[in-house]
Length: 124
Image 1: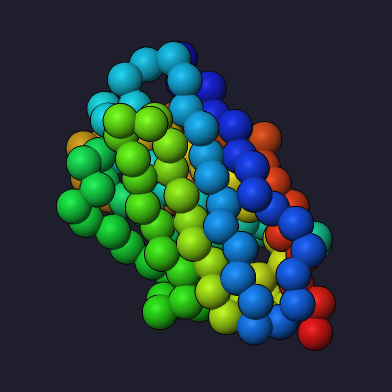
Image 2: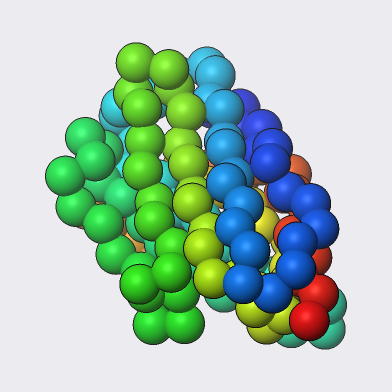
């Protein structure tokens, strides 16, 4: 079992930045590929970014590529999402997730553990 707790969400103006964190506990953090997903009101959950177990490989949704950066610190059991150049379309609840699969995955059903999520609101 892996417990995931997100933090760092909040309100920001368009063009601003936020950094999300996801603290993991339980099993060995480096045994899991990690991902960030988001869900806006009235919309389905969508993939944002993923990172491999040791952090060597990353993958982004086209909508955030060049603006968001996913990273991890396995010594601190923490996943990050640096979000720059925010726009109102980024408003959503952001959740981190852990996958036991070896490679990166963008599909939510491939993730085994989820955090509760943190709200990000971007105003124009």
